[in-house]
Length: 130
Image 1 (cartoon, one colour):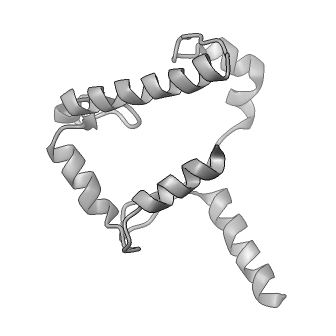
Image 2 (cartoon, rainbow, N blue to C red):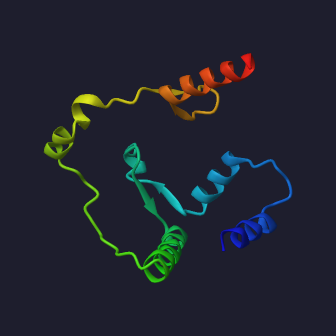
C-alpha cells in the first residue's frame, strides 16, 4: 500500500525541480487560504485565520485523516484544549529547562533553531573529513 502511494505521489509530482516558495505563499495569502490572526493590528506569531478555501482544505484533510486513522486503523479520536496552563508547563519542566534559541536569515526572513544549524554544520564538517 505504501509503495502504491509513493508511486502515485511521484507520478503526480511536477517534472521540474524548482519550487518558488515565496510565490506560493503569496498566492495562497492573496486568495485568502489563510492569514495571520489579527493581522491589521500587527498579528500574533503562530496564530492563523483560515479563509473559505483554507477552511475547505482543512476540513478535507481532517476528513481524510479520520478515514484512515479512525476507520482503517481503528484508533480513537479525542479533542483536547490547545492551551496549556502554566502550572502544567512548570510541573513538566518546560518553563525551567526549555528555551530554543532562534536566528533569522536576513535575506529570506526565514527563522531557524540555532541548535539545528549547529548540528547540521558539524555534520557537514564531519562528512567533509571522511
